[in-house]
Image 1: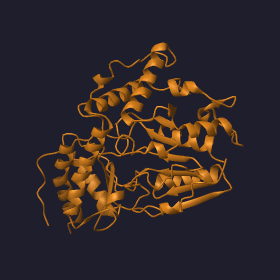
Image 2 (image 1 turned 90 degrees about the vertical axis):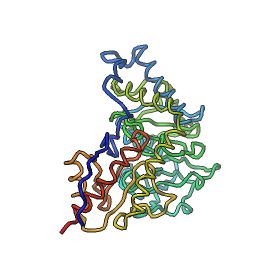
Image 3 (image 1 turned 30 degrees about the vertical axis):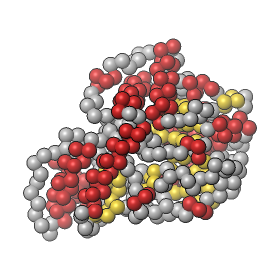
Image 4 (image 1 turned 30 degrees about the horizontal axis):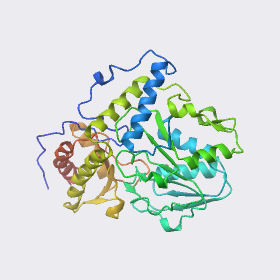
Length: 375
């Protein structure tokens, strides 16, 4: 079947799942107030970093007694900091249903070499049996599987009276989904996901229970400097007040602050979630009307509203051809599925993406699929 090439392209064709699209209308002038050339340890530098933390708390609706710290190395650095600093005090249940979860399994088993680890896994498109998680142990999981498009539906499967800690990689869920902080002891994310910030910086959020673990437990292995959150058995409070462990980019800090202020101007978390939901619905309707496209997440209640992943009928080369065609046409950039995921496409639908751009993308998807599968 031949389909005529569409005449209208998305105004912003950036649908990458990380780094993600900047906020609508972003230009370099948004960074004019960045403290370039200034020390991050100066009074003004620390004030700007603290501003980023305060806005994070307000927009993400983090409880007042939780600590928020800006840390090195993106979400990966934040997760590793939590794993290396907190695990080992008791057995661990680690959940994985996509590549990043599998990475945490590997680090816990092969790097930390913990003796008591249970792996609860599921193939791409599914969740492990959450009823089998043992919360007398520490539990490590991703809230939203960025490379599978599968998320946990809520926090109801986590008991309030758990004995162990819950460590949650929430990098493609924060600012777009309803994180249940009462059920989470550690939450991590990066700036370059849902709010479209720049890379290399992570955020770690600690509950009072996590702080208590840090101050009462010393891991048996050497601790790299960039992972250390305590000194003399006490939390280094400055990390959670803007005194970062290493040198952050003040350009990136400014960019994050601008994105948070934009989010606040929209109406905060509720508005961000509504935008992501509306965006994901555009792709969902298209998939529902196309017999050749199929959500990777089998159950509607587990489908991500940010990293929407789907497969296509035809050979494994079809998604690759589509991604190349659309990039060459300037209609969509970086929508190929993750390298470890089943062949398919992955379209970012977070809050910084405009719904109109996704609607403009749909005719291009039809055209590219027809072109990629033509005899």
